[in-house]
Image (tube, rainbow, N blue to C red; front, side):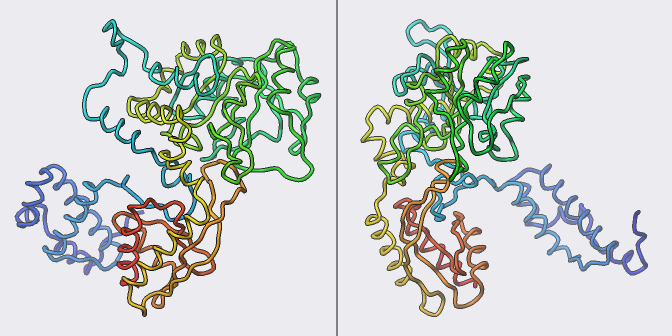
Length: 472
């Protein structure tokens, strides 16, 4: 129901400057020269519509021409300013999904920039000059690093699982343990993916205990696939039991069935070397006899977002020929970043040094302690003593990104307590810094974890905290 203007609001509506009047303002003319007439006029109309609505509701609204022109400029700036922008991760969560998960190695960044800035040999054979296959840029690398017969890549791991299940089991049964019916994030659940593939889900075992005999009893002539999903974003502890990849593969092959092992995190290294529990690696799944293995590219692998599919050549070839493979294919920038990341793994020592995800995992308590001391000293030398209290304390970092759930790494935290305003105000001001700085709040303190800060970000954080503290 529309609100009829009162006499007072009607007079206020008449005071709102017209489009033609605003277009005469010098600052608006400058905006037109810079951003184009069409966008500026559209923003004028949107601002005026908003003012009229506020007046009709009896809400206060600026009506003088100069103020309205300023609102127009703010709206133009909003439309012209990128929202996907650089941010600094001081949370201590290494694979922070909200902040883009894995940081790319510098070589991967350069590869992406090179390919983005010009033409590239995306789908062309250098020897013959004929049309080629874009997957060839990473296929041999994935096979060499994992021992798989063949490999391909799509845009994410949910797509990889959807595609593989569609190819192997559409219209037939897929057997999976009840304890592995995971939700992978964003409300996407494994049963939904299986249903979308056209396969029928058969659940076996219980949430906490599934045995090999549970799988075997469920096999029927209509069974097409045994699916194993590593619960990489949660843990079941206590009275629990699950079937290993090797045991499941042996059972499946006795019945001439394939096994799909969704290992999720894409790990290529032994996480026990970082003081963490063992995370299944791609090499282990292939060696165990799994026919298809899927994972993400932007988790523990440390590359760009991608869904990697490895396994037996006959299956991977069928996957590559399916129409969904084209629908889910990766672009040249993803392939450039993934190829450069995979090439680092050819030298494991180089991978540990240059892939930021692995470097953050491998950082020792002593290294982090020195960084924390340096950050505290710089903050104390920059900030007035009456703005913040700064202290160090022991804490933990997390892997995040649906990898190694419940696993924590020891760290040294730099804890800030504002003497004016609240810790929430300080965190908000940091998020609106350029670049945005994201930290976490614990025990009514703002906590900065040096584990997830790059070396060249420390001084940026010092400057950001100084500005934020002045606003509190």
